[in-house]
Amino acid sequence: MTEPGQTEFGRRQFVQKVVSGAVAGVAVQSAFSLISHPSMLAQTVTTPDGALQGLIEGNKRFAANQLTSVDHDLAILKAHTVDKQEPFAAVLSCADSRVPVELIFDQTIGQIFVNRVAGNIVTPEIIGSLEYGVAVLGVKVVLVLGHTSCGAVKAAMKADAVPGQISVLYRHLRPAVEQSGGNVDKAIETNARMQAELLRTSSTVIKEALSAGKLKVVSGVYDLATGKVTLS
Image (cartoon, rainbow, N blue to C red; front, top):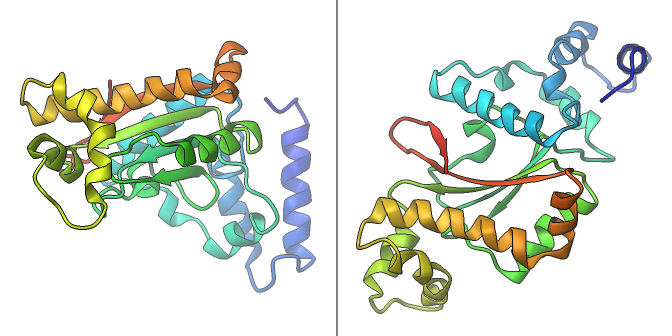
């Protein structure tokens, strides 16, 4: 957490850059609008519990149609993140177009390190990406996010013939399907939970961060109808 005085110094320094023209064409009042919401700045959240709470509170705002992220000046946000990114959270979600991760958690540019793949499954490529988020970017929480009515899970339950390489997803999803008793919702929740456990056990980088208390890995399900995320 920022020591007393450092936050205020950082704010003054940022505003001075705006005033001096570092962020061209942006009004000074926009800078004050941005810094008045510390959660929108790079990694003001410094603990795993705080990071998870940030996601939970953001989702509550989204579900209540009370987004705050849309009020911030995108010109400032883009300028602030040109040379670096410091997301406080990483989310592994399904590729489904109905799951707009940043919106769901009421976050904006530079706040969430998003990894997406059909069925929110863990693969070597996903592990590598999330390891980067943990080891290099310093995210404090990783959330594996399933969602209701997931087409990938439904397809794995049916195991019908499909074109191209779609069926390669099935083997990642079958363990959850086999534990679901034919219940799609249970399969979706179980899959998210199992993929989170794979992350905890398959990555030395993630295991070390967990052991050091620097990271949480959790799972949850996003309800398409209500907009709410329920941790599982």
